[in-house]
Image 1 (tube, one colour):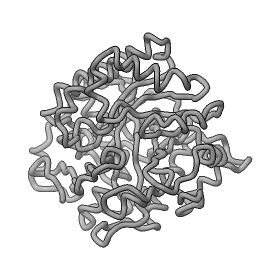
Image 2 (cartoon, helix red, strand yellow):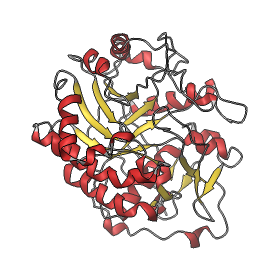
Image 3 (tube, helix red, strand yellow):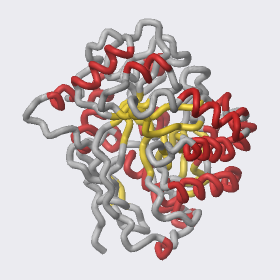
Length: 407
């Protein structure tokens, strides 16, 4: 059911917590209350745009679409076959939810870049610098550089996890993992961050009202200091699907599926948004800027749409899943960014590569995959076009058709 974060317009949609799987990821999403309320303008504190740099649309090169490669299934292909599939699709970035040695070995001497993950239950251990050094020495160093490990996700959605004790461990674990990489001379090649649920925001609509929850602001400030100092990205798991599922009568389906629609205009920036994902990302950028950090890059570590769901999971259909992912792919081929940062390509990792039959929770949890475990397509999103010789190499990032409205 929806969790209302304010009594006016900023909504956090919270389906039932999913146990297990990838630490219960994707259980939370923030969307818009599409219908403007009479006291909307009173509820939003105008953003001080002077704290944004003049070049907040600065260009950064991000050159491929990423895919999340989950392993919660008993019928998934061997890692060697998964690598063959990624190569055939010309996908050069993947994220896994552990440091599975079979995958790290199989992906060696390939051009596929990997983000690996430290499980949430390891965070307390990694507050000890020596344990962090041991972890990196065991799980990273033996495989690098043959396996192109480019990122370490320390935990997953820790700021909003049901186990609130984890939050105190997060920054020390992140810092210690980075320090261990530095000791081994690997910090220049491997970034360290943590993926976050959009439920970490107290306000999300309009995007310029983006604000972090008060209860996490202390640790968030420390974490953002780390990201700024190490030039690492802020990772966000963003699922417009959850917003639509909980408010299908109020949120236009075309808006969440990147289809032609009238969109919405942020009343303060006058920027026009034609889809929810870009608006969510810009809300995160504004929240970060409110904490005093202007040039931290925001990347989408997860986004996707289920192709099947239970009777109460509105919108979980093959048609909608195909439309969402296909339209993201089309826009990324144009290599642009969001309304707030139109010249910065938005790196996106789709969830997920395969349908995973052992994931607990509602039917949708087992049906996010673009492919079946036998490597046949669950539905066609056009990825096969990337393997065509006539297609430019996978220069894939989100484009935004959001434009600034003249006043």
